Length: 235
Image 1 (spheres, rainbow, N blue to C red):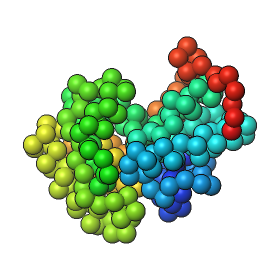
Image 2 (image 1 turned 120 degrees about the vertical axis):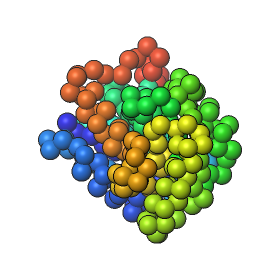
Image 3 (image 1 turned 45 degrees about the vertical axis):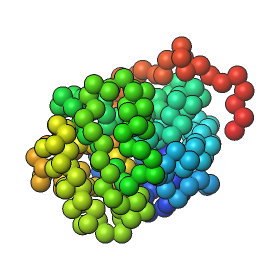
Image 4 (image 1 turned 135 degrees about the vertical axis):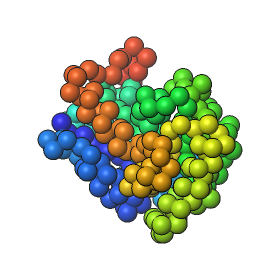
């Protein structure tokens, strides 16, 4: 299996962290390539950043199609450009946000998200996001941890501490039974937090890799009923 993972922002250290986590959990015979677009935002912290990231994501999808990759992962929790990417190819395209939510639904009745400090209303935007996948009934809460995306890697112990603090509130106050790490910049912290909180903690990058491997092994492709190929692919 040849899988291409696209980090929609241009921060190299985050791309390297995504690659490390993906390769740690991928099957030995799975070939993983992780890239960032040449242009785009340094971090995705709002809807404006998300919109800026989409053209770069789609360009990398097109390159991956031309290079013969078997499947693709969009490694940002908001899944920027996911549905557009699915129109471009019948090869499976998985978003880490969608993958994390679906995995959580198999492990508990409700899930909560832990996210970097957002530049949008958490409740409104996240309810819309979860609604896209038909999972509102499973959505317990979303909690910001007070750190920006680019701050996460500067002090991983501090990031872990605030994730534990907000994760505890999500479990005890919001009814979250499974916690989702709401940013690819949090890769590698899932098991450390899980040990402390004693509830499942899902890293979307890992969830996406395992789902995509299963889809590829099963031999199914993206339906072209809704995700029809574009009439004109101008990339």
